[in-house]
Image 1 (spheres, helix red, strand yellow):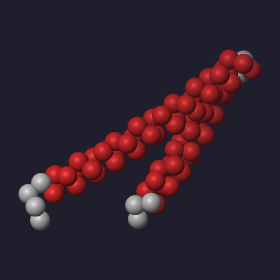
Image 2 (cartoon, rainbow, N blue to C red; image 1 turned 90 degrees about the vertical axis):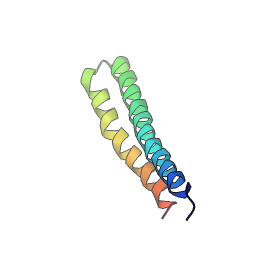
Image 3 (tube, rainbow, N blue to C red; image 1 turned 90 degrees about the horizontal axis):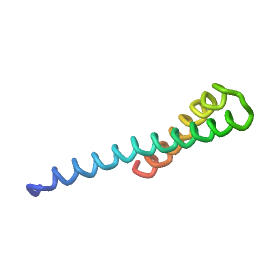
Image 4 (tube, rainbow, N blue to C red; image 1 turned 45 degrees about the vertical axis):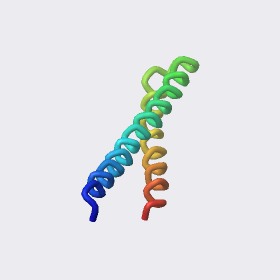
Length: 72
């Protein structure tokens, strides 16, 4: 094993995991934004944002599953 090979693997793992965190934040943030637009258009104050949260997390989890499945 080369001296810097372990550091390279750690950096690769760190970038993969931080990418997952950013992916979750972007997907849920977009779903909440769409929910906010729904609230503004239909004047249904908390329900659109709540629906965005409830839809955003499963969509993000499914996207992460598909990304991880490629590595297995």
